[in-house]
Amino acid sequence: MGNDPKTASGPDTWQGDTEWRLRLHRLLTCARGCYSGLKGEQMLSASVASALRQWSLDGRLNAVFTKVPNEGKRSPRYAGWLKAMGLIPGASDFVFTWGTGGGWIELKVDNKPLQPNQETFFAWAERTGCHTAQCNSVHGVETALREWGVLV
Image (tube, rainbow, N blue to C red):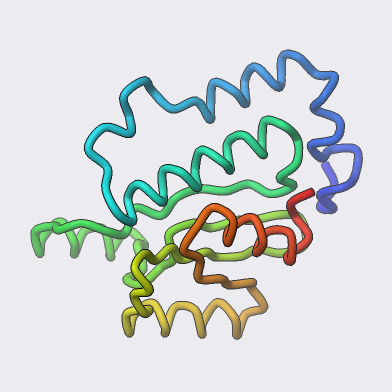
């Protein structure tokens, strides 16, 4: 397997590989009713995830992505466990990796600013050469991924 997203191991070769595409589809499919009760940033996150799934299945996103479950109220004990296991306070909502790099996207609604932990996390990511973006829409995410060269 190559590290370049445009090599023979990349998504371009998935188009003719029915078994692989079915496996990827099962991995990325969201259960029926999974959007029920989502509001604000949660709904934006679900909309972004839906677009990322589709771009992946279409072979347009030349990166692997996942959502970082860093929001919500937790007991101090559970929060401590998560931090001990590697969850970083301020980690961005979505992480993307590809053969030659990586990036982080933080979603915000209503023009909310980054929290101090998020600012520190962005600075850390940028110091290590990662791409970062703060987005308030699916279009903003699409633009960032295009600028990073991983969305066609």
